[in-house]
Image (cartoon, rainbow, N blue to C red; front, side, top):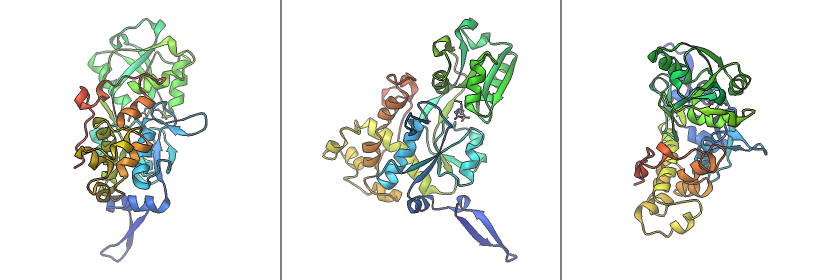
Length: 338
Ligand SMILES: N[C@@H](CCC(=O)N[C@@H](CS)C(=O)NCC(=O)O)C(=O)O
């Protein structure tokens, strides 16, 4: 990371992390030619490598969209797989430019880590998975259970709150690596696997017999997941934030990767601004006015990205639910491009 050298009153030079002094992350990224993106170590639908070793997922698509906005080329991304525990340090130290790793926006993370959450690309909540033959139909029947989970996550605190509030005892079995949690649960070291509900659907695919397991109906927390950047660089923060907004606005306006070339001829002013034929919206972000055109053309609008990675036709099979657009009864809402 770039260091800024300040002179102190005593004349000694101190190096200050550029992140806290308004570092030009966008300039650094343009100079090195790629976006360095922190992702998970493998969570299907969110960030996971396919059989050719390519990263795919809804979180990966945020990184690709950012690269499309900056370079007009969604492939200019390098990935750093990170455990839950490692992720914030990697961003703080400048090892990565953006963290896009099923990370919950909480007040503590937002206010004490020197980081900013740029939005929410997936509204989630914590759930529980059990073996069907355990015979349990509700989380309220889990008193005395051994509960498997990941360290360094919001999950541990939520589970403690939930069991305490419901006067249930439990024993936590926690691991740093997600695959260790999956294996421990699959081999019967615990009765319950708890994490974000989307994570349960994703990790269930890795179990020896996915059909032998069920997700219980209770959702015990709010887990708004989204991309994170360092504090102190508003230009970069704006770029990541508006990349997300562009994908949501595109869906709302009916602009897709398939029709965006025709949409360039649209007479709708909101579409004209989004696709860059009117206004200087890209320039104001420090990139080309084709920024949103490139995002949608190369990566897709929010709905396309959701459907391709986690939607009903994927192995995860998740319906839009609260992740539907606000105009369709969901929570996904973006301020206008104008
Ligand atoms: N959203 C929660 C949980 C995130 C988390 O780390 N979940 C685990 C379980 S789904 C995970 O990502 N595993 C995949 C990995 O570590 O690569 C948080 O931000 O703390």
